[in-house]
Length: 113
Length: 114
Image 1: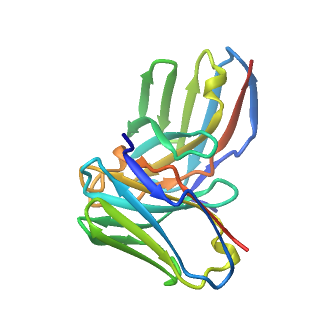
Image 2: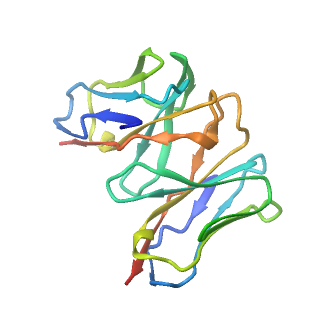
C-alpha cells in the first residue's frame, strides 16, 4: 500500500462547477499538507499549504485536512478552463531537518468550457 | 527571470550511454532536490542537498550521482542508462533549509532512453 493514495482520474467537469479532489494517507506522522498544480509539460507549482487539521481558503481554492480520517481535500469553486491541470497532493511529517515530501500520484482535471 | 532552470529540456539517448542534467536556481535557496516523475505522473524524491551537502538519498541506483559545485547548482549524472530511466526529472529548491512548504520546481528534463 502506498503511503499516499490519490485517484488519478481523469476528472472532467463543466466550467463553473465545484471540483473536489482528495487524497488519503497512512502515515499518522504527516502534519504538513500541500497541493501542487502541474500544467502539461511544466513543473509543479505550490497552490495551497496547510498545517495539521482544519481548513484554509485562498480565493476560489479551499484546502481541508482531517487528520482523524487521514484524508485531505482540495475544493475549487467556480472552476475555470485555466484550472485544467494535474493536481498533486503532498505531505510531510516535519517542516525542518530537510524532511522529504511524499506525493500522491496526481489527479488530472479538465474543465470543459 | 527564471527561478529554477534545467538543461537540457529534452534528452534522447541510447541505452548504456552516460548523460548529465544541470540545474541552477537564482533564488538564494539553501536546499536543492532532484525528483523523478514517471509516466503515471508519480513524483518521487531522489536526492536533496543542503549547502552542497547530501542530505537525502532515497533508494536510487548508484548509477545516479548528484553533484553540487555550489549552493546554486545541483547536477545529476547518470551512468549506463537503462530503459527504466526514461522519465521527467525535476530539480527543485527551497528555503529555509529543507522547508517543505516553499519548494520551487524547475520546468523538468524529459529523458527518453531508447
